[in-house]
Length: 430
Ligand code: IMO
Ligand code: MG
Image (cartoon, rainbow, N blue to C red; front, side, top):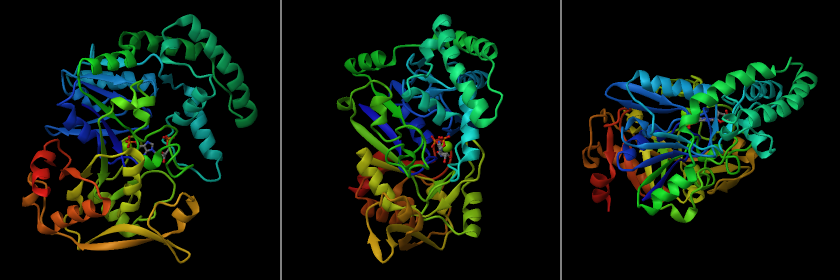
């Protein structure tokens, strides 16, 4: 069984926790897009792990974790992550495999990311990790890949070629001194040496695994509305964070994917700029941000918070072909008097039940809400759906109705075991 996990909102839905839980049942876990802009948090035995590049399944000792061709790799960040895991007693040798086709992030990508951002009239609020500029080079066919990094001669040639053009642009357009070839060459050659032991033909590995009836979990980063095509462009990331990205970014055929699990928060959050129709007013935003610890796992930036937007999540279900949903952080809604669910938008007298693609409409539309009463009790200790307060059950059932999709997981706390899961839950609903 090959399963894709995707974010259905703007990232930070809690994908890390679902991946961690499902990793137990699979043999391979694969990251297929994005880079160290992602921040996937897993809490286990009171310890918090934040992953940026390595699939969060690495915490399960016997699993093989792959970084596919679709990912952009900051080698320093990756090595840091490997070391961090080693210091917690988690060894990745023989379990971490990196595609030679994945592109490498260089210092000039990170600097350019920040320079572009500072000059933009409408800021995106990028993570500054060099993601966009690295993907630009990939599409522009001048990128440098993992396979190049471990071949000193090719690497020298490609880096020289890149710096020649880039340094001129840095100097003339951005009044930046540019980058020294020798410094980068030496630094990155060293990274190449460290990483070479992990380089592996990922598509061959995964396709062989499929023949052997092994199970694969594809770990999406970011969320549907940060997708380069279907997101709230230009306030998006530079990769395909929808389910299709799993095939392009790993070399596995779409015909081999069996299941797509969408992850959604019980409310909504967004980091960075861009339209957010259901965003709370400032005071309530601050209250919910603190209640939900909504601060970016990568940049530490405060996340913007809002009500659950079913128009967007319904669109996500379509775009990704989601077969089941995980609803995360339901416990954060504990103690609220009322809870709202957005079911449409109103703009210039017109009602939208489907997501409008014109950014202006999305930015200015007024959400149409259904209201449900909240519950008082704390729900973190609950492991069975029928033990949830009636109003919490009603909220989940209402979501399921509106979304016309099955909910298979409900997260009621940050820790690995604070989850109400499929087997118990499904039987009660069907
Ligand atoms: P995970 O995997 C939330 C956002 C940034 C910015 C926009 C573009 O943890 O869900 P980029 O640096 O990618 O060019 O920034 O995308 N963004 C994320 N927001 N979670 C993420 O990843 C994100 N990755 C990028 O805040 O608005
Ligand atoms: Mg994140």
